[in-house]
Image (cartoon, rainbow, N blue to C red):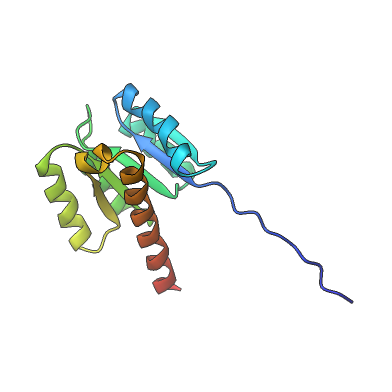
Length: 146
């Protein structure tokens, strides 16, 4: 009997974006699907709400602001690291202090990266390259575990 040829369809990329700036969230909703066809974007304006949503389903990537009311990006990252999440986290900020704490976590082996103003100023290609770098780092980490 001949083996049936099946084609598996991969699901769209899931990206959660957390920021209190609704303009930034709207821009990410519009820009990311241009870079990553059919990407599913969940834009959340509250880190606390993001934590509850992330309990339900892991994203392929989390992008968060550093400075937000009630909870900073570093506090959010610390909580997620304590929960042993394994998806990549990309922190965006124009603040050098944020870049320092992100580097500290990355140097400790956590899958955390920094999205700089320069990345964003490079336009879609800069954003796309930075996201791809984080996603590829995640894939290689998973392969090492298996």
